[in-house]
Amino acid sequence: MSMSDAPGAHDDLIRNVAGTARDRVRGETGDDLELESAIAQNVRSLRLRYDLSVTELAERIGISKAMLSKIENAQTSCSLHTLQRLATGLDVPVTALIRGADAEREASFTKAGSGPTITRNGTKQGHSYELLGALRGEHKRLECLMVTLSEDSEVYPMFQHPGTEFLHMVEGVMDYGHGRSVYRMAPGDSLTLDGEGAHGPVQLIELPIRFLSVVAFPDGI
Image 1 (cartoon, rainbow, N blue to C red):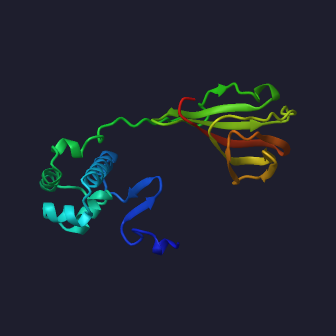
Image 2 (cartoon, helix red, strand yellow; image 1 turned 135 degrees about the vertical axis):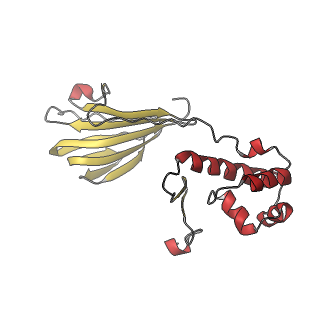
Image 3 (cartoon, rainbow, N blue to C red; image 1 turned 45 degrees about the horizontal axis):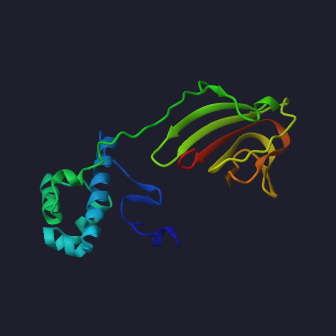
């Protein structure tokens, strides 16, 4: 499917499977978008719970189908008057439509060069691991490392762990194995792999080598 054929390709909302994004006017904060997203999710959830179509709910509360669609896709700010009409039409208090907007969202920021060096299985082989950030979200734990391989890295350990790992080459060239496959990785190359499969560098071609490793661990890890 081409971009021009994608749903919403002709509106001002950028869509992908991870969420939504849109242009904002100068001075608008992220809180505004979070409020719109909370209203969108709550309205859609309640409408589906009552088995109402977009057309049926729009007619019930007296707004256009297009406007309701924009509200459900976080494309527009909802006025207090419209919010009250939505609450009345869905038979819930107004507070039910903004639930979740005030939830704390964590972030991890690391200044260049300030990430702590941590120990991993490859440390004794001369591999250096700089922790760039770690976050424990609602469903998974995320760990971001800058890995450096030098002349001291003479033995190449193989790793296995739960979750998914993303590698992005920054400097140098190496052959990286995963299961029965070997990938020649140069700056700009990326590899996403299932961590349960044995993986690790199998040959260092051009030193020094630096690559970003991002591991998303599943629940309970």
